Image 1 (tube, rainbow, N blue to C red):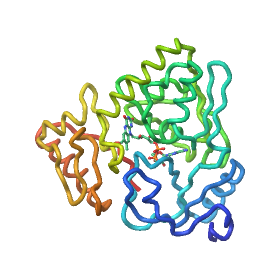
Image 2 (cartoon, rainbow, N blue to C red):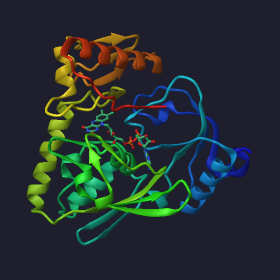
Image 3 (cartoon, rainbow, N blue to C red):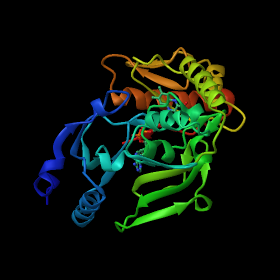
Image 4 (cartoon, rainbow, N blue to C red):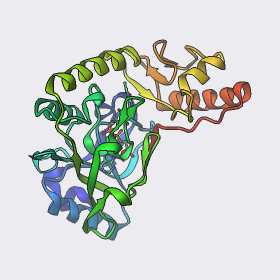
Length: 292
Ligand SMILES: Cc1cc2nc3c(=O)[nH]c(=O)nc-3n(C[C@H](O)[C@H](O)[C@H](O)COP(=O)(O)OP(=O)(O)OC[C@H]3O[C@@H](n4cnc5c(N)ncnc54)[C@H](O)[C@@H]3O)c2cc1C
């Protein structure tokens, strides 16, 4: 069975994944599949299940390291309009899992709704960002989630309500293969105050991450009451480098990929940081970065 034969219009074989990630490194996907609607997605997943083909969901590739070799099986992206729509009813906003988080934040701020404005500047998709519970001290996306529509392993659309979901430091317990859409409950706020909070969050975020033209990725979750960056600095690892992979001078919890960096360089840098931080501070850093 070949996905390229069964779904020729939406499948690319041996597609390089580097351009689809923020780090701009990594090997090709055996199949890159971009379904046009939920029904087609369901048929793709059923075909993969029947053929024993592994499936991975790719969002914006901002929390992802793709290894240097080929990625076997299907990598699925939800780029079609069916997966990127934003719908709005009063204080409830439903956003497709494949749409940019940036568009959702801008939409809610324009409507004078409050709850997502401090996430401005985060670049992932809605699905990837909810799976990774993005945010910072000023707020995490999970706090505003009312329900999540998922596709189960059995190919069924199911809704997970707020009280069935657990969000913690940059992770959620959503383990179904696909986040189709997310509904947020966002109270109406004072429009000028919402805009002011968004502007302040933008400035703070941009000052605390690598420059926007640098291919980069965040490495570790913040342990309770501490930041991973402070622990890394305490372990005297500021600007540590392995091959072309270097810790950002603006924030030590980010790796920046210099030209020629391999995925193996990033993996070795992650291992070095984790080991040295444990030796020198006693803290066990937990990896935030997803690796394929
Ligand atoms: C410069 C920079 C700054 C950042 N700053 C922050 C920050 O301040 N706070 C913070 O929390 N994070 C931050 N991040 C991390 C990153 O932005 C988020 O984790 C990101 O939003 C993840 O979304 P994505 O669409 O890029 O997911 P991807 O990286 O593509 O995927 C991440 C995981 O989610 C899964 N996934 C993606 N889409 C779906 C879907 N529709 N259904 C099911 N699973 C899915 C993937 O399979 C993968 O396991 C930063 C990253 C960078 C590069």
